[in-house]
Structures are given as C-alpha cells and as structure tokens.
Length: 393
Ligand SMILES: [Zn+2]
Image (cartoon, rainbow, N blue to C red; front, side, top):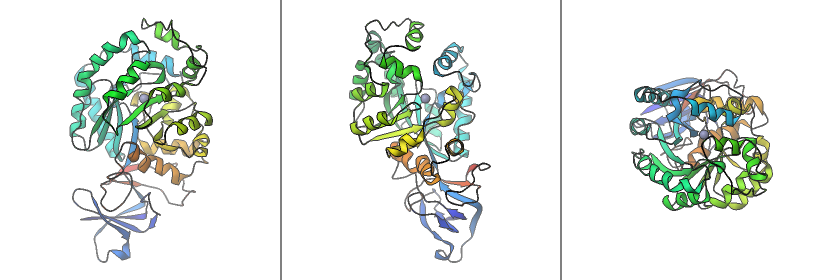
C-alpha cells in the first residue's frame, strides 16, 4: 500500500478533506480514504497543494499529433480545415512517433481516459499499450452526399474492426458533424452500434454551420464544391444545426456534443427535451485557437447541462492538458464555480464515456489515478494562474 497526503484531498463526489490521506494498492486501486488521524502510524508521500482524481479528456484526435503548428490561429473553422487538407502525406514512422509522444504527455499531466476521434487506425497500437484508457470514436462523414454513403461505409469496415478494444478500451462509430453527415449515414451508424454506446458529434463550432441549416448561406456550400460535392437538392430547415442532429441521432444513446461554441439556451433546451443522456464537451483552448471565441457557459449552467472537457488535437491547441482547459475557463469566465469545473473535468467525463465505476472520483474501490495540483486551496477563491497538473499515481 502507498499513502498519499496533501493540504487538501478533493474526492469530487464528496467534500474536500483537509490533511487527507488516500491509500492505494499496487494496482492503484483506492483501499482507504480519510484524515491522517484515521490511519495511525504510516509512511506518507506528502504534497503541498491538492490531490484530485485523474482527469478525463472527452475530446481528442490523437492521430493528428504530428500536425502541431501547421495551422495559423484565429482563422475560423473553414480556412482551418482547408489548411489541414493541404498537408502532404507524412511518413508513417513520424506519425507513430508523435502519437506515442502525446499519449505519454497526456498521461504525465494526469489524463486517465480519453474520448478519441479516429478516422484511421494509426493510434490503435499505441492505445493497446498505453496506461491511458481510450474510448475510440470512429468518425464517419459523407459530406451530406447520399451517393457517397455506401462507399464511406465500405471504407470504414476495416477502420472500425482494427481499433483498440483491449482492457477497458472501447469503440463506437460516430458521425462527424451535422454539416457533413447525410440522414442515410446517421441511420447506418445508429443501426451498426451495439446498445448502450457513447456517441460523439461536433456541434455548432462555427457560424457557417448554423447558417447552412438556417437559410443555406455561409461558406460551407463553396467548401463542399472544392471536394466535387454540390448540394443541389439541399433544402435548409430554417432551424439551427443541432436540430438536424437531434432528428437523426438516437436519444437512448449517451451523446457527447462537442464544442457548442454558438449553442444558445434555446438549443440546449431543445436537446434536453429530446434526451436526458446528453453531455456537452467544451474545448476552450481549441475554440480560442481556431475561432478566437468561447462558448457562453452561463447558457449551459442555467440549463443544468452536464459539461465535460476536451483538448481537441494538438493541431488546434498549444498542449493536450485538461488542467490547462480549466485554467482558461476560469480566466475568461471566472463566474463558473471551480467546484463545477472540477466535476466537468473528472466525474462528468467519466460518466459520458461509461467509466464512472472505475474513474472520475476518489472513492474506495475505484482506480482513478491521482493528480497533484500545486495550488493553495481556498475553495472558490483558489488562484489557479501558476498551477500545473502532475500525475503522482
Ligand atoms: Zn474535434
């Protein structure tokens, strides 16, 4: 057994413990949790600051790890995607090297589980051997172009089959975004996934996405044209893009909506009326990187939305670190309570990915990982500016 202590232990699902001790066995499973006086004479490993459970990153694209710095910041989404598409083929060894490096970096900054988007199988081998648990979302798109759907499905058969599902790893098929998936492809995804799976979809990341559905304007039509796809028969619904997603996804699944930069309270309400199993993943640093914009978190708090945190890929971020995302939110929208941010980053993410029985909080029987944060804990007034997250177990 190992005994870890800090000024405060934050179990997340129960109150902070001053001078708390958390005891883990060799496998990292929590055997006991309490104050020093509950333990008697033990050798403790001491930290200044706080200890929290391992962090959950609900949105990443590990396979893009070799693309750091290739896109300019602040261009907005469509020019950003065009930058990506222009990139030449990269040597497979270099891709694998970067995947391994960022997997390792995520582990060191305390990330325990990742909801990871994959369009290829490049990350599968790393995920098989990583200490991080991965839920791989095999992401499909057909540019809303039904003539492409059959071929897309055919192409993805092997991509899905070869993803890692070793240990606690899981996988599901998911749609990319409302503007890139036809109703036919949504239908295939709904039928192909086994029950009680988690689905993830990019949502309302850029203004053009809403415009396409509201009145057919915006840059997406021209963008599709560059891929030889014309949306001749496309009829805008007059409603924001999330309504199209709600019409086509299954409300019984756990659904993670990602980004939500432009989601209004009306959008969130509509989604909550449709299903109770919705998680809203926010990737603030990626939103600043691509669009120089953040979601308005008050809309989500007002609607009691279950929030989670994602890093997105290193192509649209300066690091893959959930703690850095918390610092960004608390810097730009400091009214969001820190205790809620901690829940977003841990137990909510664990629930969204179906790992709430093993990760997401410090509770006896769980193996959530332990992360040290070097802050002076003062509840909601805690100053996070110079803090960092570091894995200790
Ligand atoms: Zn993404």
